[in-house]
Structure formats: C-alpha cells, structure tokens
Length: 347
Image 1 (spheres, one colour):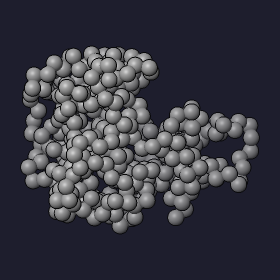
Image 2: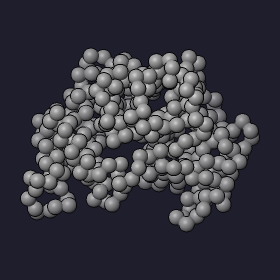
Image 3: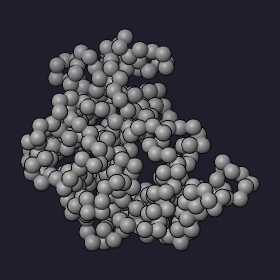
Image 4: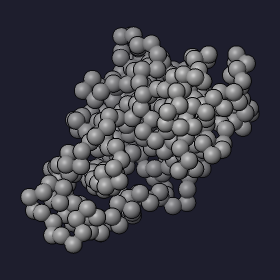
C-alpha cells in the first residue's frame, strides 16, 4: 500500500485568517476567469523573469532518463507524490514547477494543459507557463504555496470552499462530448462479469471479504441501468481527481492541482466519486450535503449521488483489485476496499 498522491507543502503555511478559514468557504472575490495570453494558449509562453523554458524542459527530461539519475544534477528537486508522473521544483526559478508525464497516456498532458489554460486567472488552478510535447511531454506551471489537509481537519468552511471551486470549474466554457463518458464504468461492469483472475477455476470463498464484495458488486451492477446515471445533458467540465491531497489551502483560498484527468462528467457523479475516495471516505454525509449545497446541485442531482456512490465503490474495488494483480501501488488495501464496498452496497 502506498500513500496518497501529493505534491507536498508547496510553500508557506496558510495563516489562520485565510479566506477558507473565516468566510464560510468563499472563493476570493477577485477570482474571476481571465482569458490566457495568446502565447500561453499556444504553449510557447516564457516566464516573466525571462527564464529559458526550453532549458527547464531539457533538464527535466534528463532528470527522468533513468532510475539512478539524481535530479539535483540538473538543478531540480523532486516533489513528493507523483505516482504516475514526475514533478520537480526548479532551484533557479522557485515560483515554478515542472511536470514530466509518462509515455503511456498521450491524452493526460493535453488534458492538464487545456484545463490550466481554460482556468487561467481564476485563482483555483496553477498558472500555465509552457507545454512541450514529445516522448515524455512536459508542462511548466506556477508553483502553489499551500497545504493539503487530511479529511479529519475539514469543517463546514472547507466543504463550502470545495463545492464553490467545483462550481467555478463547472462554469468553465468547454465543448462537451456527444456521449456521456462512461467508458471507465462500463469497464467496471465488464470486469465484474468475469471470473477474478487471481483464482481461476476455483470456487469463491464465502468467508473471504474480497470474494464477498466481488459477488455483491456483481449482483448490484447486474440490476443497475448505468446509462440512466449520466446523460449528455447533465455533463459539465470537471477536474476528474477526487484525491484530497491535490486540494491545496492557501492564504488566498483553495487551489486545485493535478488536472491530467480533467474532462466532462456529471457533477453528481463527481461528488459521489470524491465521497468514495480513500482520502475522504471518513467524512460524514452532512459534510457532503454542504459540498452539494455549495456546488448548487439540483434535487435531481442529489437523488443520483447515492446511486453514484455505489457505482464508485464498485469501481474502486475493480481498480484496486486490478492494480494488486499487477503489483502496482494502491491507496488502500484490497481488503479495506472490499469492506467499504460491502458497507456502501448494503448500508
């Protein structure tokens, strides 16, 4: 089991007077989206201090050339987290970070860059500086000074800030897809229709909590009409990352990082996904009601959240089971997720 993905403390500790701590979770009043500059939109902008961005890109790629390479040789400091990508602070430009993407998912760099450009000037995402495509795509962006908080440190003001930031993201003008993006959930249904690969030809063990959860998820998904959960008319632009570690609390308000999974989703399913994530599942239903209030979910949206949480509990069971089979790190153990799935399916 590994820890949650996080880029750690990016800078100064927020003061007790930060907007998210004393204003009912308001986003700072000057956080209105402004269009990015043409250079920024093209991914060819340079930082205000005249730093050569192409030099930073070169150094970042050299720093990930092999497992024994020391980033310090290139004036870079590896930041914590980054389960699938590499993120570095830049010693000679401390106001920026550079993110080097893996070569296995070609859409993630464009998703991250597109989100940062669309949200430039909003204050809820890092300022985009440069995108460089290639075998290992690189994004250079503003370094955010803030803290990530554990779930047990959150209160009503934090709930309002989270919901308010999601609402601003939803209002971002992006062209929606023609069909609801359900490929991941359809893959979950397909996986549940198969025999678990770690026990081929064997009967499931009734006493094994993972087998119990797998059977329960199979039964629930068999009777559930997935297409009724999400429709194209409900889609909004969403950040696509429920990990609480990527919500940074600063003196100016809440800033969201890691936009590589951003895209269109149903806000009700987005809330359900966050409520079922390992980093936030200890939070009470009252907390999620406050988030829904600040997100301005409709009565119809709220009615779908409970079903969405069941869907996402099954999704996480399948995903963690798959990662365990592949020997990949997970945020919780498979047994812990199995217990959670059983509890959500049969509350």
